Length: 88
Image (cartoon, rainbow, N blue to C red; front, top):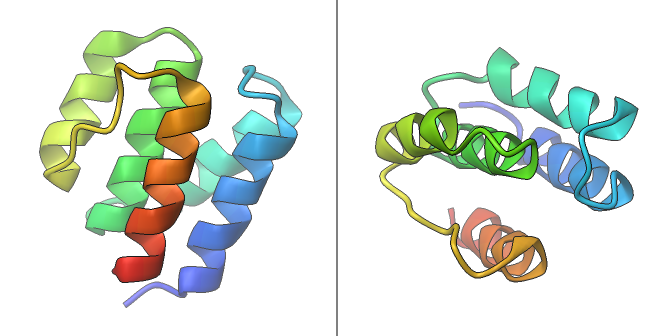
């Protein structure tokens, strides 16, 4: 099982990105890709793609994760995802 600290690191990087595709976003995306197949990281992967505006790819990762946290804005999705990570 992947380290949850990696999930926290990825989520922190997304917050630091200002929910924009930049170097912090890239770090979070790399972490999510490194743990592909774990539902927590697949949910982070979906969020990454929603941030960059790739809703089709985000939907794919939501299906992989069994989640659908998008559609309410990035700040709300961030908090929902943080709660999800804590409960995983």
